[in-house]
Length: 358
Image (cartoon, rainbow, N blue to C red; front, side, top):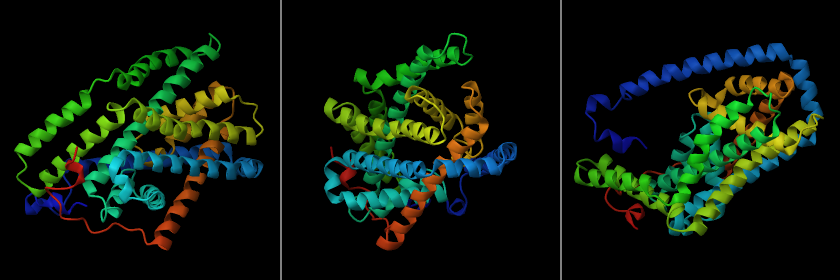
C-alpha cells in the first residue's frame, strides 16, 4: 500500500522510511525487551507450576472466553459494515467477517494498524481503499469512544463502591472528570473534528500535486463524511454504533468475571467492571510497548494487590486472555488459507471513488 506514497517523494527516499519512523522502531524494540524482561520476572516470582494449576482449574471457562471473544469480532464486523453505509452492499457480511478475522491475524503477527490496512487492501476489488480505510478508522474511533465510556462508568462505580480509605479512590475521582467530559462531547452535536477535516480536505484539494496527495484528499473527505454520519447526522445511527461497540468492550468485563470465577475467586460483577476499566487504562498508556507485553501483566499484578488478590491470579487472567486471542489468530490464519483472503492489487483511482460522494 505504500506504492502511491513513493511518487510524492524523491527517489532516494523511496527505499527508506522517514527518519522519525527509523527512530521510532528502536524505541519499540527497547520497550518490547523491557516488557519481556518484566514478564520473565513475574513468571519466576509466580512459578510455572502455579500457572499450570490455574490453567487446569479454568477448564471450560477458557472455552467460554474464546466464544465470548468471537462475539466481539462479530460485533466489530457489524460496526465496520455500518460505517461503510451504502457501500456495505458491496461487502457481504460473510466476506466482511472473513476479512476481519484475517486482519486480526495480520495485526497480531505484525503491528496493530496493519490489520486495518490489510482489510482495506483485501476488499479493494469492490470498495476503494480510501473508502475502506475511512470506514475502518471511523469504526475504530467509535470503539475507542465506547472504551472511554466504559472506563468512565467503571471509575465512577469504583469511587462509590470502594471504602473511603482506599488508596486508589482519589485517583479514580480525578480520572473520572476528563473522561466524563470526553464521554459527553459527542452528545453536544458540535462538528469540531469534522470541520477540521473539511478544512484539511480543502487544503489538500488546492495543493494535490501528486497521486499520493490526491488519494489522501479522497481519504480525508471520506473520513469526514463517515464521522459525521456516525456521530452527528442521526442519533439513531450513533446509538446503534455506540451500543454495538459498548457491548464489545463490556465483553471484557464478562471475561474478567468468568476467569476469576473459574479460578474460584469470589468476585462481583462490579469489581470485574472496575478491574477491566483500569486494565483498559493500562493499555492506553502502554501503547508504545508492542502488545503491552509485560506492562499489562505487571500493571494488573499491582492492581490486584490493591484488591487483596495475588499476582498469580493477575498473571493467569492476562495470559488466559492472550491465549484466547491467539486462538482467534489461528482461526484468522485458517480463514486466509481456506478462503484465499489476501490484499488485492490497489486500484488506480486517485481522483474518483465512492469516498468522495456525500
